Each structure stands twice: as C-alpha cells, then as structure tokens.
Length: 167
Image (tube, one colour):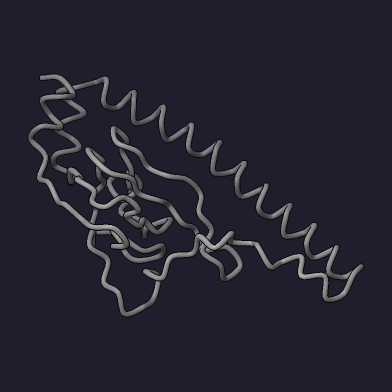
C-alpha cells in the first residue's frame, strides 16, 4: 500500500479559524497530524512573546515529536484559514504507515531535517533583532525599538482558558 492509500484511511478532524490545535509545553497525546486542507501557523514562545515561526500548508506532516518520544508540544499551532481538515496519526497508524510505505519515513525525515535548519535560522534571526533593539534602546532611550516586535500577528488563542483541540 502506498502513502496516498495510508493517508486516505486516517481519522479526520475539521477545525475553524482561530482555534488552537495544541499549545507549546502541553503534554502530548502521542498523535501527529497531516494537513489536507487549510493553513495553520506555528508559534513559539520566546522571552514571553508568541513569535510566528512558519505556516503549515496542505500536504505537510507535523507534530512528529509526539509519536517518536511522546514529548510535550514544542510549539503552539493555530488555524489561520477559514477551516482546516487534518488527519490524525497515532503511534499504531504511524508504525503501520512506516511498514507499508517506506517513502513515508523518508519524506518525514527529510521534512524534519529541513524544519530544524529553518527553525534554527529563524530563532537566531529573532534573537539577533532583539539584541540589536536592546542595544538601540540603550543608546537612544525611549526610541521605541521594540514597538513592532510581533508585527501585530499575535493571536489571542494562547490564553490559559482555551482548551486545545488536538490534545
């Protein structure tokens, strides 16, 4: 059985704009996901602020650390399209897909490595900007160098009273 056939058998969920699939630091339920439709954004809390790292587009896997070592979620995921359709991949399904479709493991490993490089670069760039802004603020007090740190992109779904959907 190929990857397409395996994906067609996944349990599906549909979620709406603004809903949080899962929050950074929350214990994982051991599931990863495949995005069929819609767009999701990944946020990481850095120095108390939710910083957008990247978007997840249709055809992408995510949440794989939950399958591999059941670790807490490394970032928060928020729906930014009107709706999103996701397939849920639990550990049993993951093992089955791995055995039936070696291309699945290759694509997943390739994507994880790409993301590591991309995320590392983004975190370094954010840190560099914060350091520069801090230096400017020291040189020119009241300069407002930090006024646009989050570019107005911080969604409200990160409050503690919102229950993540994917957990």
